[in-house]
Image 1 (cartoon, rainbow, N blue to C red):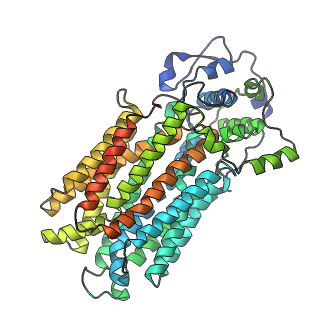
Image 2: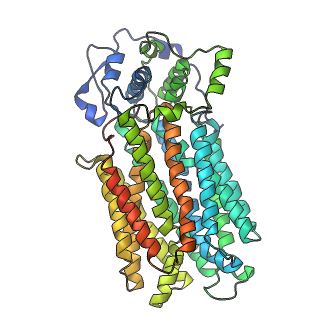
Image 3: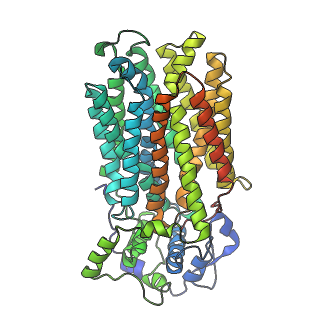
Length: 540
C-alpha cells in the first residue's frame, strides 16, 4: 500500500476541456504565485513561470513540459496530499541524522567494551555504507523510479539497526553499521526528489523546513541516550564487561524501533505517487497527466491540465515511443551516462553542478571529522576540566542537540528573505559553522566548550537545512536523482576520509578541529560563486 503507485485515470469531468481556459498574470511570479486573469492560454501561463534554472539551460522540450507541470501543480496548490507527504518524507530526513548520531553516541561505550586497536573503524564502516547507499539509491531512482527506494531505505535501516543490538564483537557492530547506513544513504537523494516534485513553487521553502525533522532526530537520539548510556555505560579507563555496558544495546533497540514504526506508517498508511515530471522525462505524458489529476482530486480540486497541453510543447512529436519493443530498448539504454552528461550540458549548468559537488565534498569531510567524535571529545576535554563523567557527556550532547531545532526553523525563514536567499543564508551559516569550531579550541572550562558547541550545532543546522533544499532545486527533475546522488556520493567519499584522518591525527589534540573548521569556511566561500539563486523560483 505504501509503494509509490501510478495514479488512476482522471474522471470524465477532470478530462473535460475548459471552454475558456484560465490565464495568468505574472505580477506575482517572484513569489511563485500565479494569479488568474482573463485571456491567454495554459501554455502561455506556464511559460511565464520563473524557473530556478534559467530558460535555455536544458533541453527545450523537457523545459517547456516541466513549466507546464509546474503551473499545473501551482494551480492545484498546497493541499492535503502535500501535507501528508511532508510528514512521511520527514521520516527520511530524521533517519539521515538519527543513525550517524547513533554511531557517534555509541562510539565510546563500544570502544570501552571491545577495546579495538582502531576505534574509528566503526565510523569508517558507517561511511562506507552511506556511500554505497547514496550511489545505489540515488542513481537508481532515475533509472527505476522512486517506487521501491522510498520505502526500502527506511525498512533496511530499521531491520539492521535492531539486529545490531546483539553484536558479539567490534567487527559485527561494524558490519551492521555499514548495512543500516546503506539504507540511510538513500533517504535524502530519493526523498528530496519525491517531495520537491509535488511542491507548488510558492511552497518550495518547505524543503528547507523539512530539516526540522533532522534537528528533532538529534534531540530524540540524545534524549534517549542520556538515561540509557549515562547509567549503563562503563566509565573511561575501567575494566568493561558486557553486563555493565548494556546501555548502547538498549539504545540501538529503541532507535531501530522508531525507524520500524516510521517504515510501517509510510508503507501501510500512505500511498505516494510517482512524480509527474519523472514520467514526463521518460516520455510517459499520459501517466503524468493522470497523476496530476489524482493529486488534484485528493486536494479537493480539479485540474484543467490536458494531454494536449504537454503535446503542444513537442510539436515535432519526438517524445518517447510507447510500444513494447521501444520500452525494452529504453530500459537497456537507461544504464548509461545520459543523466550525468545532462548535468554538464551547458557551461553555467556545469559550473553549478561542479561547485555543488565540491561543496558537499568539503562538508562531507569537515562535519564527521568533528561531529562523529563529539561525545568522545567532550568526555576527553571534560576530564581535563574535571567534569568528564559519562552522565555529563550525554547531558551536554542533549543541550547541543536542542539548539539545532531553532536553527532549522530560522534557516527556513531566512531563505525567503530578500537579500539573503538560499545562497546568502547557506554561505553565511557555513562560514560561521567553521568560525565557531575554531572558537571551541579556546575553551578553558567545560561550560565554555558546551557554549561553543551549541553555536556550532545551531549554525550547522541552518547550513544543512539550506543545503538539502537548494541542491535538488537547481537540478532538472529528470536528472535530479543523479544530481543528488553525485552530491551525496562526493559527501560520503570524503566522509570515509574522516575516520581515516582521525586514526592518524590524535583526537586528543585540536588538529581535527582546525581541519574541520577550515573545510567549512572554504565551502562557505565557494557558495558565493554558485551561478543560480532559486529563491522565489520553481524547480524544473
